[in-house]
Length: 119
Image 1 (cartoon, rainbow, N blue to C red):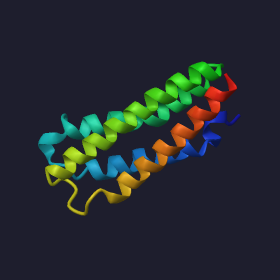
Image 2 (tube, rainbow, N blue to C red; image 1 turned 45 degrees about the horizontal axis):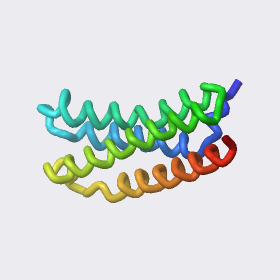
Image 3 (cartoon, helix red, strand yellow; image 1 turned 45 degrees about the vertical axis):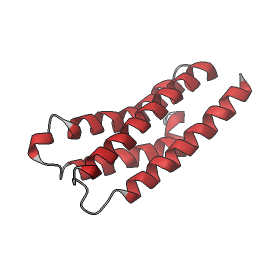
Image 4 (cartoon, rainbow, N blue to C red; image 1 turned 30 degrees about the vertical axis):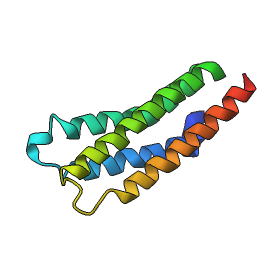
């Protein structure tokens, strides 16, 4: 039986972001394997994971709380992308990733607003 969160476009986009982050971070220098690469991957994985967990909590209030956590993790990803770019780890730039972050952020905000009006 498909879970409800899988139908959320924001979760789907967050899942794509995880794949993109893994692909980009695989090109980081080897000495970043346990540093920035690991950190950005954990933060990226946290975004769809918290959407999924929150949706299973059974109340709009709990779901909203987990969406805020997801949004915080998304801002970690954005910050770590900036660090990677500053260090020259994104030779082709990170513009597409930043765009995905912005889209997901806007979608999370919208979902939070909708859920808060239902509480």
